[in-house]
Amino acid sequence: MPIYLYWGSDEFAISKAVADLREKILDPDWVSFNFDKIPPDEPDGPIRALNQAMTPPFGSGGRLVWLVETTIAQQCSADLLAEMERTLGEIPESNLLLLTSSNKPDGRLKSTKLLQQRATIKEFSQIPPWQQDKLIGKVRQVADELGVNLSQGALEALADAVGNDTRSLYNELEKLKLYADSLGNGEIDERAIDSLVTCSTQSSFQLATAIRQGDISTALELVTELIHRNEPALRIVATLTSVFRTWLWVKLMGEIGERDERAIAKAAEIGNPKRIYFLRKEVSALSLEQLRQTLPVLLELEVSLKRGADELATLQTKVIELARLCRPTRQNSFR
Image 1 (spheres, rainbow, N blue to C red):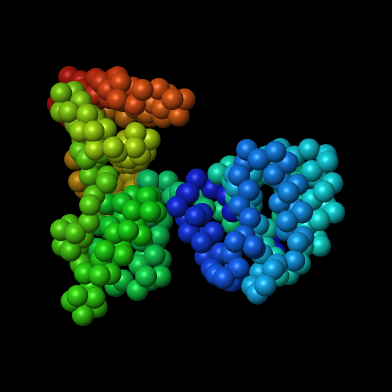
Image 2: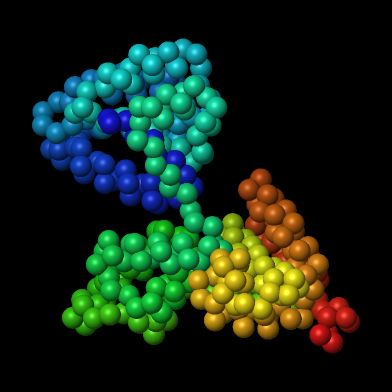
């Protein structure tokens, strides 16, 4: 089909997919004639995109019309819908109309239903940071794509290091590929990951540990360090949410009497059941209720940041609140 809709929160993955389409569709010598990138704030941008998509390409190669961050699949006027119905089935095979959006298409809309009939739709959403198996699968996929041979330990270590940051994953694997080439394409193990990969999540994990221990002073120092290193505040929150969600599941499964480490790992979406022993020790001083209370606070923190609150001050306030929640009670201290 000459129509594509890419949507999701992973901006890097979408931009890479767009670059692949450009390389596939356009002749480099005719790019300036056959490539149209229409921004979301352009008046009547969708109408112009539809018109351009109907225009035959100049010279050799095809034509690519890219409607950036469109809202067609979230809201669509009757006039625009009528134009889509008239045009989408008539776009020449030599042309490609690409629509991208960070928002999920609204399946109730007629425009979305029309796109479902006429377009190739692909989701590019970031993997939730607590879904370790999927993160490891993503690392394996990109490593195979780039021809990097990683051991199982290296796969897990790299997933822990980069989390769901696709851009960082590609950057680190490109670096590891050069390293492997210098060694004659040997298998890369977890020791190489530890020494070569910049861990963007490690300090956030340290922050989670300080919060869990009720160590307000250390937690505040780590928050300041992370912000001064230009670590995105929402990424910090994502890591904290992932860690506390895992701790909550491990504690909950223990409270209901589950002792099978594989069953606990499956419930908590942990790839390696051997981690359960250590996670149980980490949450032994906390009650189930304390862990439950952390998630609403983390949600409040995420909402505040998305609404434009000052990153450092907001993180500091909520980290203090979380650390106070996690301070061991007298009852827990004797468990």
